[in-house]
Image (cartoon, rainbow, N blue to C red):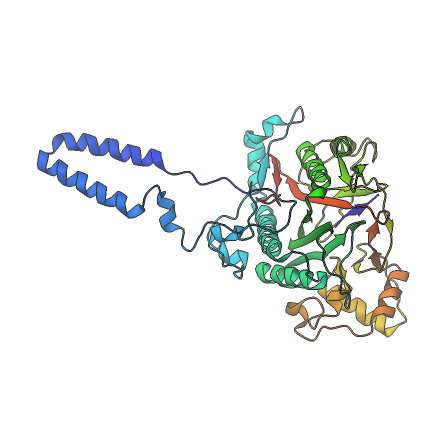
Length: 467
């Protein structure tokens, strides 16, 4: 969600060990007679034959692992993107095995590691002190890496069916159901981080279909797909832009490169306003030609990245995407988790709240308010029990499980709740997040990554082969 105002390393074949064994064999061969030597050579040849031509020994222990081969129909992703990305881990296609079960007894994939470049921090990657501090956080790292891997597998699966003609409500339901399945939804302990955003064209953020919305994705649409996964309230927030017409490629490239710049610049003690300046400089160096008119790509100046707290999607710090976007004193700190998200537009580069609202969240530090309406008390109790302070949407309240089968079974559907929901917003217990829109007729794009500032390095948790 937006704030307003290489997974792991490739396995290396164990050639060195084989060479040592061969050397030992040669020494022993000198003491053997000619017949014994021939026997040993035959035996070694047979052993090689079992592995197959050019196959590393690890391949024999890979179980059901396969090579990803299916390409996504949409643009906006790297050439290395595959919609069956997860089969290399032995996952089914489509994915059905909960990720925690898939990696039981194994290490979860580590996000992309980037060293700190700010003066005075380059030593952190090799310091014994920071490494010891890092080891104390392994439990936290396990949780965020689990959420990140679920995000990668869910979005890879979603990229296989996101194509022109799909109803956005159906798209969101399929993505969210797979999210619940792969995270093994368990109420507020683990589940969906926030509603799936699928904002189209001039709508930059915070749109998801309400019940009855039959909007269909079209070939010339530019759609931002933004969804989250949470484990123990640790939220992975990541987004990409979908398009099918190559004329939008410069817009998508501008925003993707701007996000990469923001992620690359981020680090312990880095000033937030410096990141915003770097993002804007990169993004606004692009332009896009549409129907014979050239449009400069503008950074949407009142949208920001943000820190992420436990069960708190907006953790208190905003990361601007324009120059002089915040106070000079604000810096990133060790241990913090951030989502760098950038938005580019062919319009005015400024959004306002518009359209029917779908996103809501209980306000974290809201004071006690006596409620007079019984329906408001009932709805608030449902929100507290099912979502806590995590964002939710009206479509979830309309589900038989009311947003969580673990919490409510199939008896959670909320009936005639709009008056109660409005009342909770009016008294300051729930915050509404309407869609954020630039001028009609323009196009907007978004890319976003979540990372953690570890004592030793920056780990880009949501990095994938796709973006």
